Length: 129
Image 1 (cartoon, rainbow, N blue to C red):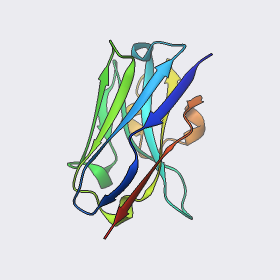
Image 2 (spheres, rainbow, N blue to C red; image 1 turned 60 degrees about the vertical axis):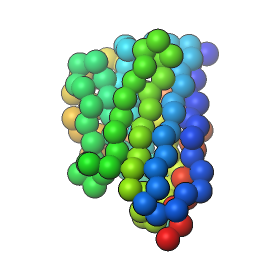
Image 3 (spheres, rainbow, N blue to C red; image 1 turned 90 degrees about the vertical axis):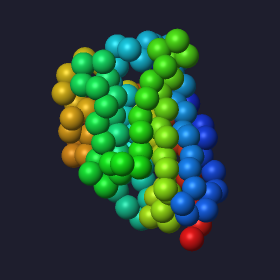
Image 4 (cartoon, one colour; image 1 turned 30 degrees about the vertical axis):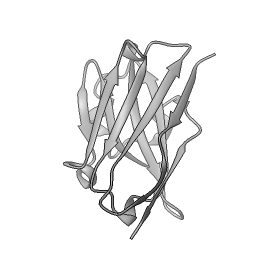
């Protein structure tokens, strides 16, 4: 069974940092583009970062300089380091995977979430002011 499991969310004060993890099982992440999306209360789900072997790492303009995506093929996991957290970062963060779509990460900010086939259950990030 192909599965993605997020972890690492929590309650943090503004200015703090979190490292979100996305552990994959049932498939090899090296063959996939793995994206991070977030959905704030009452808002649409938005893509914030993506990584793949073919595309490298990409970020939405709104998070550049604060978010860093990385992957560890040995652990079959992808990570999202979030620094200088702001209250507006409060959201459920999801990781998602899609195979065989070169270039998808370059459009993470605008791609529809339906493009990604496999989704985790999400991890909550709450930033207090």
